[in-house]
Image (cartoon, rainbow over all chains, first blue to last red; front, side, top):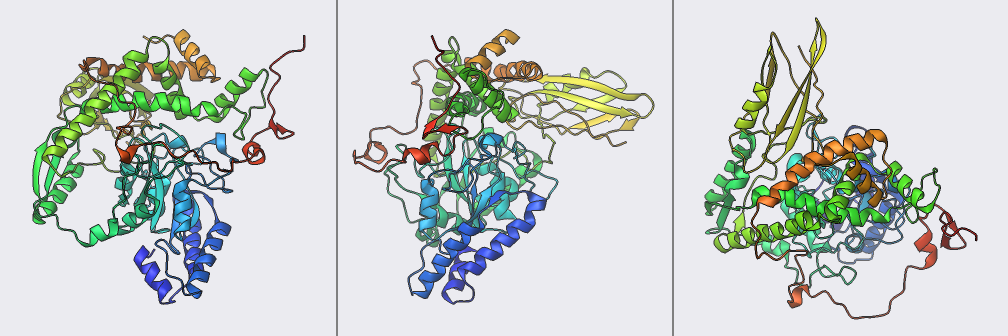
Length: 507
Length: 100
């Protein structure tokens, strides 16, 4: 796929038409979908109509608008008028939005050509795109691996070369992490920078819309178009939007102070840390000053995030009650039964889990202990960043402690002390189970060991960690004497719940 | 500790019908996640104001009020278009009030 500037210069020189580009992008996306499943729906008619309009403008001699003729994928949690928007959920399998999200409206007004709706975790809840009711997305770089999530389809659509840019959404890393896993650029803009009008709400105080691209300037070009105050979103800021592309043309980062948070680097696995250090060396080579900084409340971030996002989700998803949004249970007795049955039947397991948690933390007697506390901790985390930005101009850190993992697999990082205790609980003759896990997760690991002599043996290991935990981590290694086995660990989408793990045993 | 009774209570609050299997799975999952959330209790938050939103700091750039200008609404046809069951331009739901 061409870059935005290549598309635009080709359109200007009449090397190709916008319709040709749209057809090419659609064909590529449709052909690739059987392997990556990056798209839930395609929008051929809408794309061709938009492209024809661009061609007509070119024919009339009009100046090209910033996204003219550029094929774009839009995450399926962002409303598109007349075009099915499922949120990766069976609940909205037949939902046709009656209006466009502001980001979509601005994108199309700038000449963008939407070719389809990108797959994602159900209601954007997940970080591997394995939670979609329309099947998982596979990472175009390595089809055995996840693309990350929840905007996995948006990242994959760019990485596989169907589109130069796409729109995603980020509530707790849902743009940043899939961009990292797929090797593309992703930007989670400052809260308030991009209107969320038409973004199906998950956690309103954390939801963002943002762009993906193959390179920084394409990503900046898309952000330019969607950024800015919108009267339809009271949380969109009036702050003027800088000219991002102009800023990119005059880059001089000599003397810029870069902070590297010790708390983020601590959990990074070897490969990830090595890549970050390479980037830091590159920044030093460009004249930046790199120094370690501290964001002391980092270890509490996941817990605070999880309380806040589930609490807000439980309120936001209350609207799916069988009345307004297409799905309704056939087993409907009273009005209340209709609500409950519809929600029970059409929400997936991760969504139900988060609604339950959110309802619990907001319920009588727990509000102060969880929700209010999490909001206080959020203020402290914000202060960490405000303090850090007094010392440095930018912060550089790994997006994820590890690279893209395999589908159905969990990369777990456990501190040594816990790992040692896990190993001790293993009965003989199993010699060692060492699990690596990010501090702060509770993990139940069920290892099923196939034994040709006696059938299968089940070993359960429960590792419970409370931060601040020891920081040293080792990689998983399981050996069951006398047969060495490979153990696959199932990862749970949120990365914060228990893991029922069934091994894939190779003798 | 979270009991199954607690889980049933929360499911009822959340208007969520769960199967028996889902209940036992949910009790297990929620207990695990809540034990992680409990790390928050270790943080000294004395004097820290809860932060509900990143905006609303009274500067012009984040002022959230807009002029109250009349504009066309969605219209009832479009508003009910996605409903599972409608009748005469209204949402249709199971009977709430029984005949006396």
